[in-house]
Amino acid sequence: MTALFQLIIVLISGSVGLLADTIHNFSDALTAIPLGIAFVLGKKLATRRYTYGFGRAEDLAGVVIVLMIFLSSLVAGYESIIKLLHPEPLRNVWWVMVASIIGFLGNEGVAIFRIRVGKEIGSAALVADGQHARVDGMTSLAVLFGALGSLLGLPLADPIIGLLITVAILFIVKDTARTMWHRLMDAVDPAIVDKLERVARETPGVQQVRHIRARWLGHKLSAEMQILVNENLSLRESNQVVENVRHNLFHAQPRLASISVHAQPDAQISESLTAHHEALAL
Image (cartoon, rainbow, N blue to C red; front, side, top):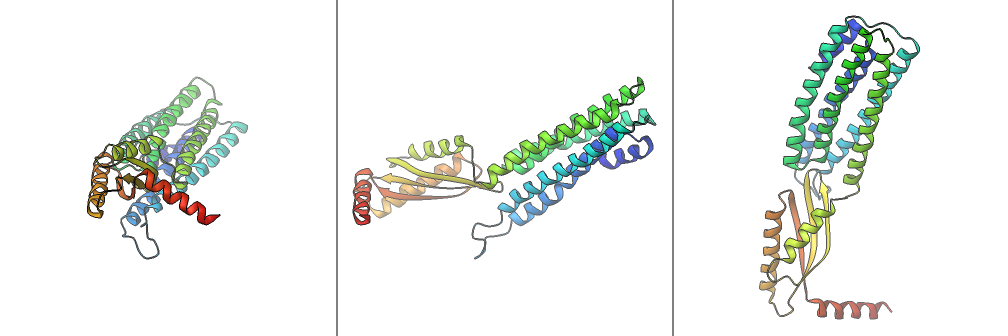
């Protein structure tokens, strides 16, 4: 709604700064489409082919978001350069100022909502989209300064603001692309791994924790680890330790959707098995 209102003002004013902001807002609104599709796909159950489910679709939607933001920067930059080479006075400057304020309010409202929900469900794509909307609000205020410059007799203020907005969009592209790269490469915050290790290690019966792995599938966390237990424990007792570890981890990490815990005999047995395998390899 904000972008549509701004588009009308662009048509009656000829403001390239507002045009850049409008294009940005349209791209921001349209990013909700692939993200919404990804959330729907993510609810599908795993199949024999997609054994981990469809959570990765959310990360692919994040890539689409990055591309859409980048394309919006190209369009905004092109229009700003054309207007810089062929400056024209703004028409209906007061309407441009109103549109910029409405753009800021609309974007900030969307940003607050997306970031809050993204953090609640652990969605990096949704948080990034919310941060994108927040910067959009700042660029809308930049349009306001461009309009004020036009009122003061500075016709180049509007295209200069358009170029500044383009640069701001490119910074968003960089930050969002880095976030999505981490997700696609199964990178997680080391603090999450440290927390999983600490909780498992503090569980009674666990002597050591090794080989921890974790990755995001959309906004759900999947992990696996190996624990060393006393060699004298029965199979039933070892399984009980494993279940205790799983129980504690699910409570400690709300975003954890699945965790595989493998129990092995204590370090001395493990070392003798390793030495045996090395001997066979020779």
